[in-house]
Length: 538
Image 1 (cartoon, rainbow, N blue to C red):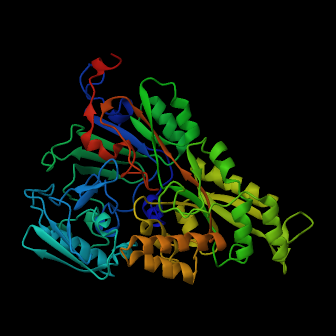
Image 2: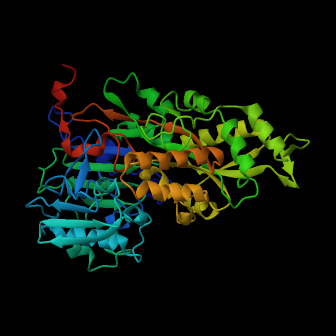
Image 3: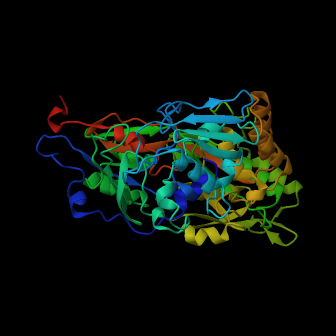
């Protein structure tokens, strides 16, 4: 969602293609694929890997973490269902108290019992300022969390926070393990223990994460016994390895997914998302910090052409973090493509064309760098199209590729082709992205956007559970973004996955920007049922 998902998706992308084990590369997941028996393992290709596997540092906060469970979980329709909680929470009439009764008989993968103390430990540790969790403000509403016996947890809130139950899909960590370590640097961050359907067996950073089914999982041992997530940052390499049989499935950009369209042994899954691509326009830059330049770029860009040509219709134009088909979208904030209007805005603001067509004002040339992730063709294509549109208005953008290690130190002044977005409550999309107090906090508010009206509306939206008041607040945010866009939002992107037709039970959810471990058809891999090779094609 919000910019927070940028951190999880981007923090540890390493150069190079995946190097799987010899067995996986020969025929991944084929325990009996050639003999007619069922497959019970799978290898999938993902674009990013997390920085950490600790829920206390941000992993698993939006659910589907494989290694862990939350008190609640989202089903295929993004409706909340019980997970570690035995039922949905009891909410007091004033909206300030949430009581969870826990499921009985749940154990961590090391055999230790799961109790209310683990829940209290998880939330209190995340809220501790000494814990390096960039998403701490998502839990700002919590005044206190306490255990009542081993099977009940009570949250007391500072204010009625309508989205609080959705926040409790956050993965729960074991107190008996993590309390004995440094929460920020201990072994748990790379060798976690949880209650989830899978147990981590290995993590070769930049290569793969390997899992085995948890035989004592409270909801039953998964039929897919071994599961590997291969980290392949380059889109072309991911498609090549899928075609070669090294991968059973992968996320692919539209142009590469199209190449598998006629393959009868594979299926393509399209997931609707909140995932957007945007250009950050840093306040601390003489050009991108100018409101006239921001407004001009906002209408100079041809969003529909990007959807048509780059996404091949697998997406839609974006005018902010909220998709146009969301019930929270503020109607009337769509921006037209108007090159003449963009030129007029710049003329009136004193940005005059120079001899080469690039505008100048008070000796400042209308140019700035735009960074995008190396190997990410969608970002590259968006960046190049954006630069081309900007030049027609007299603004020169110099696109540059780099890793996040190169890009992050430059974000205060340099523009970035970024991604974000989270389904669910509008607070998820907007608070971390736009709140001025979070500027410079890692990948939160990457543009250093500073708008006091937006700040007030963001607080108003999260501090009431009145639907009308919340709608008014988030309408205000979106209309202010149209007046002074600190970002140029380009497209919302549908995620495309190509997967071998070897299992039943695959589906997709509405997805966030972060499409690695938590999303894709493998969001529910624990529920896949292997097909018998002999049954295919009948």
